[in-house]
Image (cartoon, rainbow, N blue to C red):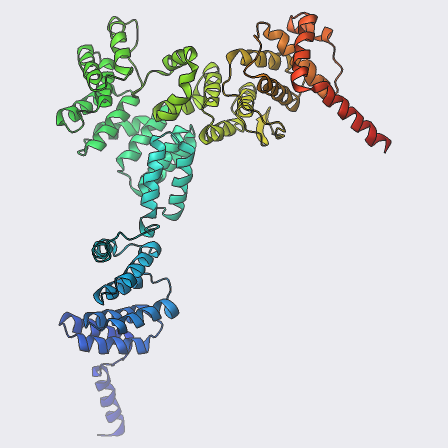
Length: 583
């Protein structure tokens, strides 16, 4: 054979040679095969070789530690695990769980507890949560005491979500929003949290944000029933008819199995006016017996029945709600109205809430204002209806709501009123009432307000004063003053007038004089406001505009001065100005 042929023959044989590569992957696969055959010594040898090829790969080190643990060589295993945490990858928090197991097998239960606590408090994934629970039980038994845990990191979002739900149920919507936003920032795929965030925005009247948030849930999970129901309600209240119509076609065909889902669908259909479908689902729930002891469910069934003309059924359900909840005012109220519903004199209720209608609540509270704070603090449905009315009620209702919220004066209310002040869609006059209420409940910091298309900052109050109540007669004086001063004084000057009025009332409370002549008191407030801003004004200037006598205006102005010392302050201010000019 000549040289050319020999070369060709060699080339023909080369493809039959299988390359043999020794690397970490090769030894890892050999180790796994040995483990499958329970050849732990060989598996350990192969994992050691894998570590030699990839010394910075923590997985191979942990595998080697696992084999040593299976062989009962716990101290050697722990040395490797500590090496991983100290030198190679401190974020590999599952090593603490492996350490805890090893210590428990060595009967070093204190050390096992320390390692397990470290695992639970630092591991974000929670891969070994079930096993950790079992180990906690063992340690509890061996140490004869429970293990103290600050938190379980992998469950932090779940715990916080539960807390946010509690806040929603308690009507503390702004606080719930803060927690839910934090959860979603950390865990964007937590759809239940995102759903509840949309609901919280809705309760606060923030419709655009609520629809956007629920749409994000449906982008991730198009069949999410809670999101579909929430979106239907949002469309209903934002008058998005075409979008609602398409969504209702889907909801009418939906027949959920789980009672919670049936209840959600039924109440949603009722709220959007699909009372017949709602009634069908409420009856399903009541027949199943699981929720038959809930008075609110019987009330909802009665509302749906009344709206489709089944008044006998409505009566039956309201009577059952009354038997289940004899302390509630709701069933008796509607049973009393039932005759008018049948005759057509009164319309059936359109809202699906287990509390009295909004107007009825106000009528009661006008007679007994001391009941307002308790109702708003204790009943989240009433509370949510107030926040709703603050955003979407008529002008008279908004005034009532702002004043009623002032009786609660908690952080949630303050946040809601501050947000109201910067809403460009709200009336300036309503914002002035909100400013007054905020000042009267002790909010003395600077307030940002959108007035007349401009954003202004109202200076902080220097005097601290707190009124435990806000009387409608006081409000009447304020409204007269604001009406007569409109166009003559700027926003800051009107704010100073409101501040003066609250200051006066705070100083003389509870001996506030009878305000029979509201216009005269309002004129006195304008008089001192003009003086404080160095505007020329006399009592005679105010007589015609306020239709009050000069003697009355003068008398009320003197009373305000006696309490607040305005003349002395003006003299001091003038003296200081003169001193500055001379210097």
